[in-house]
Image (tube, rainbow, N blue to C red; front, side, top):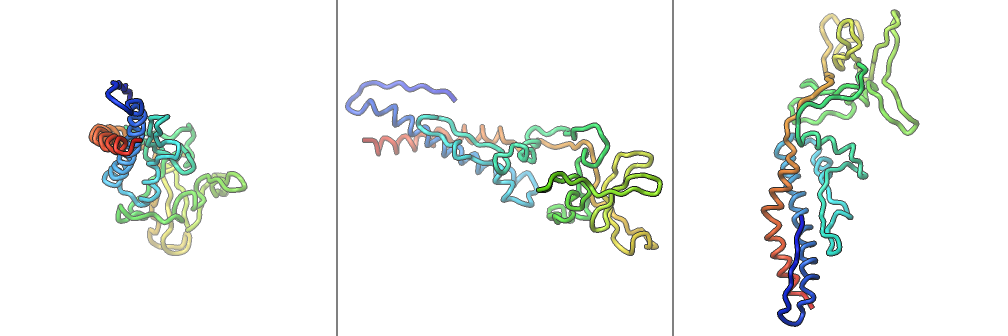
Length: 246
């Protein structure tokens, strides 16, 4: 945003007008930024099924150094993870423009895929998935620990093939004659290999690509709120600044 200020000598105190304008502008920008933050959080809760609203809402943040001052007439609303981690913000930002998103890496390991829950562990759709059932907690994906990187839990069969077997009777199955994983399965009943009926459920399936809809609308929401609210905010703040000017 660019603007200019023209003052005309009309009486005592004219020299303070520019200072009051700068002060009012900073306050108006900050109020508008807060309104953008609130509107964007509302957009998220309207367009997404939010299971942990506190965490998701905190991704839309205004840092201490983002507030405008009369010396720096710029306010900023950002999408950013905890401890200023931009990598965590991808949870939301990839929904801004939508489209196809693919995992990096050319290998066929489970770590190079998105993992998507099935209705077996997410029913109804709005239900939260227990942390113990996430692939990393099942020891079926690479995870970082205080001691370094911990790989998935694997073993070799008698034929020398490596298979992934995790906690809670879970394991990864690949497509026939391929190293490409289908997903994570779980044995539900009976002892391993002893059940007379099918007792295996697919709880996560893997995909190298996911298609997302442009549902975040961060840029459009920010523009809409700014155009609708900034002028009124400035008028209010400028009137207050003149009323309290010395």
